[in-house]
Amino acid sequence: MVGRLRLWSGYLLFFYVVTHLLNHTFGLISLRVLEVARHWFVAIWHNPVGQTVLYGALFAHFFFALSSLYKRRALRLSAWEWTQWILGASIIPLGAVHVVGTRLANTLYDVDPGYPWVLASLVTTDWWGVTRQFALPVVVWIHACIGLHFAWRLRPWYQAWLPVLYAFALLVPVGGIVGAAIALRDVAELAQQPGFLQDLFERVNVPTQAGIDNLYAISRDLQIGALVLLMGVLSARPLRDLWERRAGVVRLDYDDRRSIAEPTGLTILEMSRIAGIPHASVCGGRGRCST
Image (cartoon, rainbow, N blue to C red; front, side, top):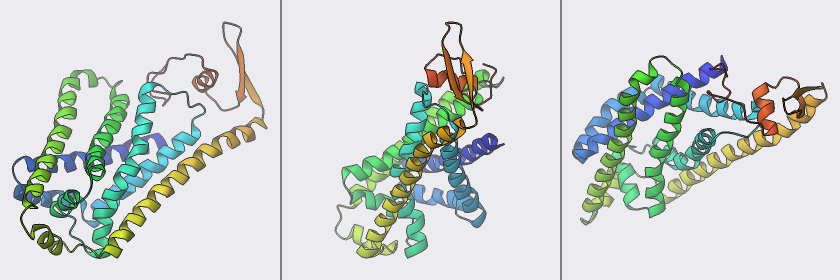
């Protein structure tokens, strides 16, 4: 049940990312079209129902991931699992500033969180800010695609649809990132005109310097909070193992006369991973295959 809820929270977040990147692609046409197209995106997500679903899925996916990390008996993961975990953990430091600078800035200071505000703020920031902004959709997209691939690859229809899915997985992020890059270039050129940025910031109701500092402080607090939760989960794992050993252990013998003993409740896959013994795992131990 928990695994299914985690999967569906991932589906909802993936749908949000797809609509967001498709909105970015209108930047290939012009800044005006990009901002006009944002209205349908806002209609879907910036209403009480859409925001409840979006942020509910976001927090659920985050805590399901922490729960999965806690329940894992071994951190001997395959390359694709490590890649997905590292990318997932990278989303928080990359995305915190963007979420706080748009959604929370609108709530606290009535800032218009549209593309003029986001693009103009990137024009005035350093290269690290621009890199962080453009790295975010790439990291999110690869993280999501890895998860979907291993959730679907045992489905009967998946192989037949794989060419279409590959094209979709390539075109959507490329179109969105290129569209955003062209829009950023256009704003950078307009910023050369005297008074352009000042007029734009007045229209979007940019907060005072104290407000901007407060938003950055909130962003840092969110990142620190997520790090504390992650470290807490990692620290609780060995304590859990010590506690469970009080109830006894199970001994597993292999053909090469090697044996290991671990607490009750572990699967053979988990015990093999702890011992560093190769074991087939098509779905990564998620209970979706028969290996």
